[in-house]
Image 1: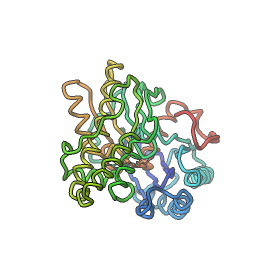
Image 2: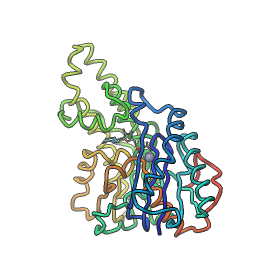
Image 3: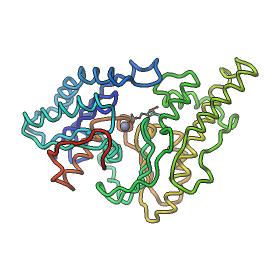
Length: 345
Ligand code: KG4
Ligand code: ZN
């Protein structure tokens, strides 16, 4: 089954052709992130305008790269939400028009279900790798959400915990901004922290005594703010000298919090076969190493998306989720999406 997936929920415009929900034949991603680098976030209307410019060239390039034309496609899948309204409209209206003209079925995909499916994606070079096996505990962490899911199947997902305030990616971005780094700050903060010593500035790990599987990051951001203020009052040059160690301490606390929640959830769900970490923050290697260490000798497999481009927003994950949805719930096809903002997975 060949599915064209379209993702336009924020500042990435992406189209991908995926075979049978896993083999990525082509995945093109255009991004307007650079335009927002000097700001501390995305301007929704600007992002939507960039989507309009990119959407058709990206789809053309994607189909050309794989050498298929619309006739070879079995279906289209598009992100129906949540996300920025203007950006979502560009993708959904384009997908609807193409599905109508090409006479193909179309399915609307929840953005989060896309991320949850991203661990199925494989490049041609790693096709021999085995498929994930349910039940799976999936931590979905991006700039917009921090959710822990217990997954019995592609369509049976139980939300175990979410963030009470900032998302994990937002915590990285806000911390990075306090340290004077560009948006999105996660990748830059990880690079900076690599040169530092996390032991120099230990940050409190959030919600350590809390029995729920919820997350919270706003306290960490406040700790960082006060630490920087205190250091500046002693000696303004001190922050620049110690920036990498401050970043390392801050990053370690975020990662410890995320890893603690995974381990607590595994204790409550015996028989879980795999732990998946998906979404933009899953690109963080310190997090992966921290979770890997905690899972050692547990028999539970840890998976992150097979390529960095499948961690952040991309059309391939939407094509994969769309394929699984169509197989499990064929009557969901060609439905009018009534909501952009919320709705079930
Ligand atoms: O999934 P995504 O591309 O978009 C959303 O749906 O939000 O995630 C983007 C988020 C940003 O907050 C970015 O700072 C974070 O993922 N991110 C990282 C890393 N790479 C991206 N955070 C920490 N370490 C990274 N290496
Ligand atoms: Zn996302």
